[in-house]
Length: 239
Image 1 (cartoon, rainbow, N blue to C red):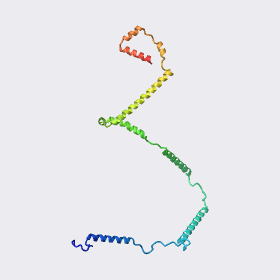
Image 2 (cartoon, helix red, strand yellow):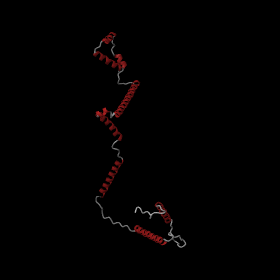
Image 3 (tube, rainbow, N blue to C red):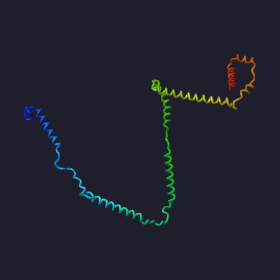
Image 4 (tube, rainbow, N blue to C red):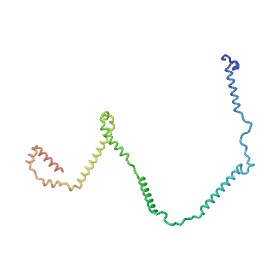
């Protein structure tokens, strides 16, 4: 019944009753955990004065005896194997008629295997990573050139700038190389000369002289054929 609280009441208060029961149970658990056995359950104390060789002396002695007996039996078996007579039956003829051919075939197979092993050891890479990267970069130019809409929308601006720098650097390198070759050729001409080129002095001496009035008249002429002839003469004098 909810109204009946006399059985769990101490000192006229249920809370005091619960506190008193809790303290009582706690004290009982503490006393039970501190209880010690009245009997000695530990290992017996050692008594070396009563055992001369130890408790397992008999087992150790038996194991040692069996091990020595097993070693002796093994030594006897080895001695019998080493001292037995080795009998070889007399050979009455060739065991095989194609022994030489089989031996040659075995040597051939071994040499082929060694050669194959050397080829496998010395094999190299079948492709170069840098060449594949360069090929991809070169093909990327065609892809960008073919994609009209993406190129106009600005998706390839960075790559186009990079390609422009590469082309400019390549052109500058070619230009520098050509300039160096031209300077080397000019130095060679100025120092040693060339036997295949005509002599300018002999050409100038053998060229017919033009009178002054002819030169004046030539300057006044302005026909295309005359200008072309005059240009050829200048080039010849320059060479």
